[in-house]
Length: 213
Image (tube, rainbow, N blue to C red; front, side, top):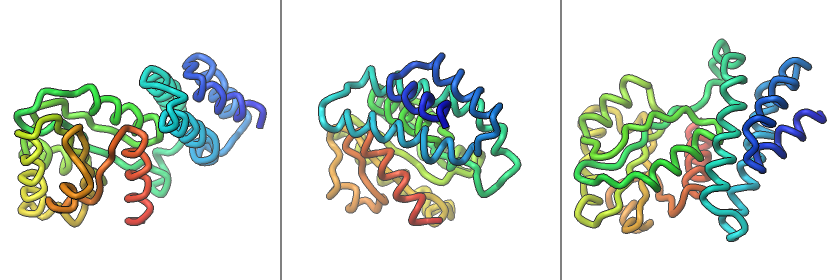
């Protein structure tokens, strides 16, 4: 248990090397990978996320914690690959067509990865066809749409409509976010939820996956 506490502390502090070392030691001692992820690693990300919400931590701390979490996950993932029930949920994320902003989107992607999701980051200026192709290729559970401009946010509805037309809408949850987005807009276009920042996006993703389990 000592190594698990060290792992949790290393992630909170954003110490990649310490997180990797503690993970190797915990695995060598036979710790259950799922307990490591659920009780310690995700718990660490929840703490740093809460600190961010309260203004006690900032974007660099979030990114460092997510990097440490990702490093630990890379060690644990091979131990989960043969157990379908323990596989991580897959998220396809991208900034919609016509929009080239990606800082916020990349932060959300890093936080989702840090909290145990498999993330397929499509980048910026992503068309509905690209989202659909990625959902099919990776058997995604969640689609995250980002936009920073009022002129591009309306394209989110086109992506949702395209998912419906392709027969995929009932198989994926759709989350949206970005500076001009709000809960009312999300409901209006038929999205499953809206995240106002990276931490709330992670919380929403976990909630949506729990609801669909």
